[in-house]
Every structure is written in C-alpha cells, then in structure tokens.
Length: 120
Image 1 (cartoon, rainbow, N blue to C red):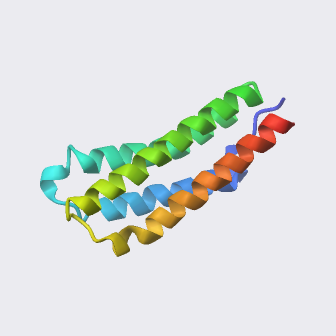
Image 2: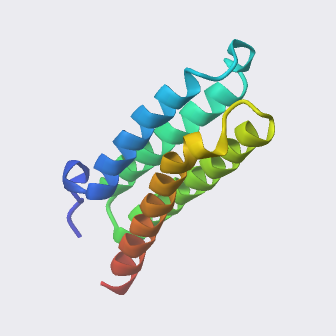
C-alpha cells in the first residue's frame, strides 16, 4: 500500500475548516475558560486533522484506519464539549448548530473511508 496524499482527502480539508470554525467559536467564550474548555475544544479540533494527516502517511491501511478512529474520537469529544458550552449558558444552541452539523458530516465521511479501507 502506498501512503495516501492527505492534502487531497476531502475529510482533511473539511477538518481544517472545522479547526477554523472552532477557533472562531471559542473566541466568544468567557476568558476564564482560556485554559479549560477553550483549550480542550481547540486541541480536539486540531487533533481531528492531525490524526488524518498522520494516519494517511502510515505504512498500512490498518494503521490509517486506527488514526481515523482517533479522529472520530476527537469529534465525539468536540460534540460533548459543544454541548457543555450550551448547558453552561456560554453559547446558544442555535449558534453552534452549523458546527454540530459539520461534526456529524465529517464523522460520517470518516466512517465511510474506514469502511472502504477495511474492504479493500
């Protein structure tokens, strides 16, 4: 198996958009959350794209799949962290709805790639 060119993967490009949107969203969170939720959300968002890139350059599809699952785990973290910001009244649910839609879409796209890699 040759390594995959992660720059050409739509999931990688979508995940970079996710990072940008998460950074913008966290700018509106309270400053006392700088080292709490803000940091966690930003790290989880960066982790999604980083794991896609790292996994794509591994020597086997099995390794790539493992990193894709880590990306899915980071997406689950982000969904949870977004819900926490809403429940704590830091942001309104409708304000993060587009972000949640993006997370759901990206999660499904990663899952489809995992299934393709497993079946090849």
